[in-house]
Every structure is written in C-alpha cells, then in structure tokens.
Image 1: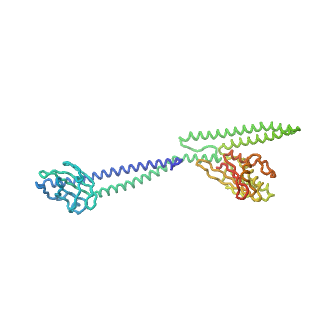
Image 2: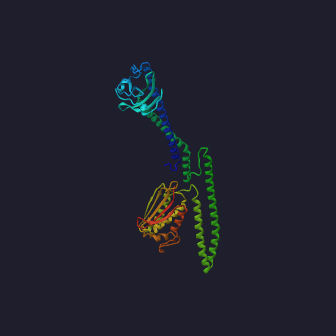
Image 3: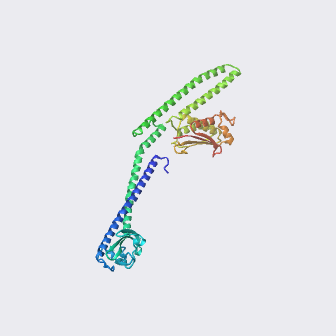
Length: 458
C-alpha cells in the first residue's frame, strides 16, 4: 500500500499514528466521562437513599411497621413505572414493608437477590432489569432499625438517562475528534508537501540536466541537502571531464593508427604481387576494425554523459526526404508518423546512422511502400527510463525466421544482387545494444520486413 513513495509513506504513517492516538484519546475520554457520570448518578441515588433511611429511622415499631415518607425530593417516585423506585424489605424473609407508588405492585430486584453479601451498613450498586423492561441502576443498603432487625433499603433510577447522557457525550466527542483528525490530516498533507518540495525541485532540475537544458543544479536548497547538491554537481563535472578526456584519447589513437595503416596501404599498392595484394586486404580490414571499435568506444563514452539529447522528428524527416530522392526511380510511397515531442537520449549522428541504415534497407527491398513510425513506450518498471520505439516497415519479400537471425550478423548478405556490404543491420544492432536498446526483425503488416528499433528516450 505504501510503496516506494516517500510522501505517501510519511502521510500513511502520520495518518495511522494520528488515527490511533485520537481513537485511544476518544475511548479514554468516553470511559472517564462514563465513570464520572456514573458516580454522579450513584451520588444522586445515595442522597435519596439517605433521605429514605432518615425518614424511616424514627417511625419503626417492634412489629416492623413503617409510615410512608412524605417526600424524598423526586416526583417520579410517585409516577407509575417511571423508572424511579424505592423499596423497604425485611432481610430475614424478603417481606416488602414499604414501596414507592411508582412500582404499582411490581417487584423491584435488588443486588442482594443475586446473593451479594452486603453486611451491615454496606452499600451495594448494580445494574438490574426492572419493571416494564427498564434497565435500572440500583443502590442498596442494609439498615438495622433498633428492635426490628435488619432491613434492605434500595433506591433505583432509570439508567437510560445515564446511557443517553454518555451517548450524547460520545457523539460530541466523535465529532470534535473527527474535526481534529481532519485538521491534523490537512496539516500533515501541507507539511509533507512543504517538506518534500525541495526534492520535487531537484527532480525537475535533474530532468532539465538530462534534457540538456542546463548543466548543473541551480537555485536554493535546504541546508541539509546542500552538501548532496554540491557533490552531485561535482560528479557531473567530473563525468563530463572524464568523457572529454576519453574522446581526446580516442581521437589521438585514431590518428596514431590511421597514419601507419595508410602508409602500409600506399606502399602495398605501389608494389605488385600476391604479398602486396594480401597486405592491401589486411590493412583495409584493419582500418575497418579500428574505425568500428573507435566508434563503439565513442558511443559507449557518450551515452554516459548526462544532458545529450536529440530531437527525433527532424532527424527522421530529413532522412525520409533524402531517401525519397535517392529512390525516386522506384516511385516509392514513404509514409511518416512521428510524434514531434519525441527525444532520443544520445548523439544525433548515432540516431542518423541507425535510422539511415534501416530506412535505406527498407527502400532497397520495398516494392511500392515504406512506412516509418516512432512512438514513446512507457518504462516497464518504476525508476526506468521511457523508451523510443521506431518501426520501419516495407512491403517487400520479407525474411523467414532463420534469415532474420543471419541478417543481423556482420557481413552476411542474403541476396548478392542487391547492392550493399551486409553491415547495415548489424551496425544498427550493435549501436542499439551500446545504448541499452535492441533491434529485432519481425513480419510487417505491409507484408514485408519490420525493423523494430528500441533506444533510450527522454
């Protein structure tokens, strides 16, 4: 769920921690409030119980006869099945001596009925189901009236009032904590965005460097990131300097080898005989191999330089115009479909060489039509770069599976009647591999050969 996003990770952790904290706080608040409300309710019942004890203390006789108290301070004791009751029962046999008018002859269950040992002058509290299905909070006390024995006096109140009060508090608490949670969430979102804004600026700066729009990270950064930016700029400079030195060494090597090879070639051509011809052949091969490996070294070095970018559309359009002129005697229709926003991460010369070989090969083998299309393919995995995919189709005879494999080998020519050295497709395949891409041969929708070239894009 979190993935590799730093912003999402910070937000999820903060949201979970905040939610858990608010949930625990809400439960603690409701629990504390219920305990306080319950004590207050019990104190209220205890006041009525004390009033009942006081009212009966001087009225009892030896036979255990009491006079009903005039007023206990609660009018609901007089209203039938109001949920507020009191009762006086003999401890020995459970005989009811007095009861509130609200009971209207119903039985009020007591905590002592459940087997609780109250002892003398102890107070017991419990939740019990009373008449009319009400949930009652009952406070009971054992009293010893002189000469009459032990009596159980109890006062009960409808706990629905207590539950309703707690439920209302719970709802208000949930609303308040919900608003607090929403505020905390918005604060976390703003905080994460503000905290990670420098990383987003660095990402855009790096994109500009890779696009060749600038050479270094510029602008202000937080103090914690300043050393990183400084070292990264230094690394870019060191990389560029190393590539410059490598190109210089490659150029020096090219000049150092080309001159002796040219001398050997000229000397051999001036002479006559099998040895001279053999030397001419071998020096030509040496020159080709030297140039090939120098090009590979140049491409391998160049693709590691940050900021080398080529617009694809102008290169393809120029090549197509040139091929139309070169093969105008065949009357080929060369279709073009290239997104103007496509950009290749590499040198223009390398793109021109690769596409030039592919389009020229298609025009040689096509009967009436060639199609060139270029699109952007999204990265296969997160963190990878997008890829430039160029499709070159023709309506020629095409190639079978075995012929396609042979066609990518250097110097292999499948038809000697068609001009060429047999190096074109092999050169394109090697160039694509140096850039981390690939060249594959497939069957074209037009009926001929499709060359699928994949290169790094921006």
